[in-house]
Image 1: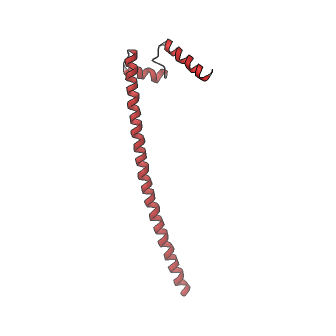
Image 2: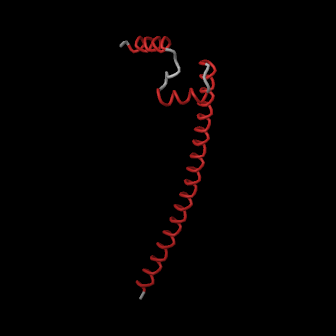
Image 3: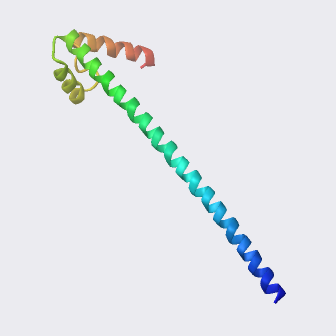
Length: 103
């Protein structure tokens, strides 16, 4: 009888400890989730800023080449990084890059 009471008290004590630990883990997970949402929000804002910079660069390319920003963006997306460069400028860029890499 004495051992049963001792066993019941010990089991109740373990259940209380487990419940407290579970509450702590759930609380930490909630804080972690909030931190993750905040981090993802910051990343999203940074990416939006990069999109704005990309659009600004398209306008600059358009202004320098005499084309519209949309035309510059379309050329760049289909033909690559140097789509708007004149053939002479593209050749100079290529030679410069080859000189840098030693190719």
